[in-house]
Structures are given as structure tokens and as C-alpha cells.
Image 1: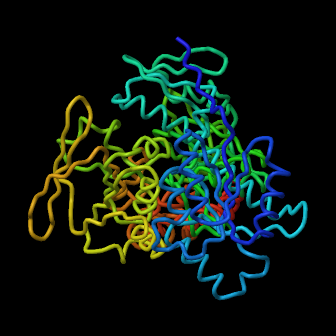
Image 2 (image 1 turned 180 degrees about the vertical axis):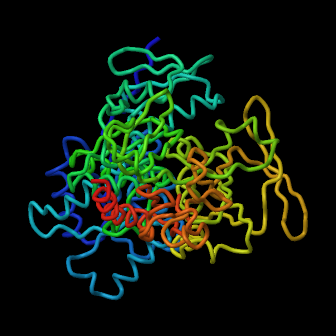
Length: 565
């Protein structure tokens, strides 16, 4: 049976809505000159005409990639071209058109910020002043690339995943492929999932390692010792890899899942330095991965560290020792592999804590998800969705789901979001119509044939229980550090977070740290073993903080290597 993805017949639309004739003409001319072979550029004189064009496009099954409009007064109006475009085309990109230099005008600033806070536009674009205007085209191509990634991955895929939509493993395969940046299409099927590759080969019920190898990702472990082994390819691990490799260290990164960690599944990180429009976790992770690779870092994809042997200092000085004379550590890797490393950086982050609601267990992986991937978000079109959590991850997930779902509710244990979520996210959730169910927890749920159809919610103050319709539940609460595999002499707190720096001496004393010098700020109780990012006790749970720690730790890695010479 041929499962070839269907390619849209008509080119996607780029819609220009501008009241001034000269502004509209300049926009259309510049867009057509550059994009006419691949996009249909259409123009409207006002919002009403633009809305009509959007309706006609939806009725004809057309795609709309980008809307450029000068409508500054869209906030609070349901008939705005920005509102109508998002409602009809969830993946469309939208930008307010402004004049060059008008960003110094208070009214323009208020308009841009107001529209972005209301999630009505993604950013602004400056009307082209000359031809060609490459600054204008840089903005447009970034919008179109974002749209392409979100809307057309399956339409231009060479990989087809066939399987039962109610099967958790099918969802896991889709999530892994999406996190790895691989386009795929889905087809219904029964039994074990089948992945058909671009060359025609079929993988039956493949592991993630099978999928990684089939697409050219390295999974092999080096035979020779490395200067630093980094466990985890989240923001902290990738930053450490970039700096270590760029400074000439033999660097290996072990990642048990897909590059990016929890941050890799974030639909949009708005407050990361250097990305005024925001950046998706997947895009940020891919950029960092490519950067580390260019500097020579080695990656072992889908390889999980499951044990660590600390080679004592006296043995480490003997080149006949099993660690190859490197000193330091021997990492055991799932599948009977080992890695010898002179230093190790722990950056394997945390996983979401499991929700203790037995009635939901049968739906985990098919309708109950830990974290939110782009694949699962798109699958919620027209459905009723709930998100559990009160942090930034939960807010970003709810906003992304609101693009597609009929309704999204955020279930929060606390009285509000003020103490746990960035204010810009709180404002955007309100603007997007996401319901906040405060002081509430999920205590039950159920459905039939593997399909969730309801949840039971309990108010934490009154104890009242309510049964509500729900087709999917996304859980982003708590955090459990992935440190169970570490030896007992690596000090951790009762929750499993690794102690570093002065905390090692404060809580373990000289028995935990019998060395003359004090541990360096990111160093654990095992000399030469460092921890960065979410896995470290006391770290700030933000992407930028993890990146900072990952870059800073390399200076201590150099010092540790110097000690072992």
C-alpha cells in the first residue's frame, strides 16, 4: 500500500493587508519579486477584504503561511485579520507592518507590545524602503521557515510512521523523530508500529537507537579515553560541549533521548537573549548541536549512562589502570558499553514527576503525556485539553496547545500563577483564553478503547470534585533529577539533586571531600565530576542559567585536567 504524503496542489498564500496604496504596492512588489515561484502573494485594502480572502482560502483548502498587516487596533476585536487568520490557520505567522524608524514612536511601541502580549502577532516587520531590501527579506524568510517547520513537515516527509494512534509506542516514535528534526507522515495501522524510510526500507517496532542509526546519527562510543564526557545534551550539556570542544578538549556527549532535553520540547522561549521574536527549544538546541559538532565534539545519540566508576587518584596516576591512564572515571553505558573519561560533566537534567492517579495509567503515552511535543500539540485540533502545572513550561505548553485545541485549561495547585510563572506568559495565557483552574488537582479520569474522555478534578480547599470532559492531559509538574545511576559517594540531597561547591563541605564535611583544596563551585563530592543545570541543587531552572553554567564549568574542567597530569 502506498502511503506517500499528499502534496498541496496550490501554493501557500502570503496575505498583505495595508490601507495605504503606496505601502501595499511596495510590499506586494517586493514579496512577488522574491517569493512568487513558491507563494501566491495576495493583497487587501482593509481588514474586511483580508478576512474575506482568508475565508475563501479556508473554503478552498488553501494554506496561508504569512499575514502582514498594518492593523494596530486589533486587540479586543474578533474580526481582526490577525484573529481570523490564527483561528482558521493555526500555524500561520503574523506580523505588524511598521515604517522604518517608527520604533521610536510611543504609539508604535505600544501597538507592537500590545499585539504581542495579546498573542495576535509574532513580531513586527519594517516596510521595505528599496529593492532589494534584505533586512525585510530576512524577517520574511524567518517567518516562512517557522511556518514551514510547523505546518508542512508531514506534507514533505520521506518517512512514514504507520501504527495505531492509541498505541503509546507510536506516539513515542513520532515524538522522537520530531525532536530529532526529522520530517515524517503518519498513517493508520494495527499491530507493531512500522517506520518506512526514504530508501524504502521498513523498520518494524524500531528502538530509538534503530531510528537514530537509520538517519545517520552517531551512536558509537569512542575506544580511546576522552578529556571530558558530558552526560546529557540539554542546554547545559550543549553549552559545555561547545566551550570544551572549542578549547581543544576531546569531548564526548552522551544523550539517552533526543538532543535538547526538556527545553527542546518548548514551543517558544521568548526571553532567551538574542532572539527578540523568541526561539523554539528545538531550533535553539539544533543550533547549539551544530555549533558543538563544528568544533569537533563527538555525540553518542540514544546512549544512556547507567553507571559510574570513580578511579581513585593513586590508581589514576598508573597508566596500567583500566581507565587507560586517564585518571578519573569509567562510565557504563546501556548495552554493555563503557567510556573512559578524565572528567565528567553531569547535565542530564530532570524528568517530570509521575501523577499518582492510577485511573490514568492506561492512557499514558496515548492521551496522557509528560511534557508537550509539537507532534502531540498538532494532534489536539478541535479537542478539549488540560495541562497540569504552574511553571513556565506549563505556560508555554498551554499557549502552544491553544493554537490547535478547542479549549485549553491549566490545572494549578496554587492560588494563582504570580509566584511560579513569568508575567509575560501569564498575560499571554489570559489573552489566548486559557482557563486557569486554581487550587485544583487531578484525582481521576477515564474513557474507553484507549481514548480518554473525562477527568475528575478536586478543589484543594473545598474538597469538591467535578467531572469534566477532556481528550488529553499534559503533565508538567515537579522534577525528578536523573541521578539514580550515580554511585553512593556522590552527595545528593533527599530529592536526588547533586550537591556542588561549598555545599559538599557544608553537608558532607572532610569525609565527603578529603582533599586539600575546596571543591570548585560546580564540582561534586567526586573530584573531577561536575554538575550543571537542573540536575544540580540550587540551580536556577531556566535555559539561560543552564547555558551559563555549562559554559563556565569548562574552566574548572581545565583545572581538573591539569591536576591529573
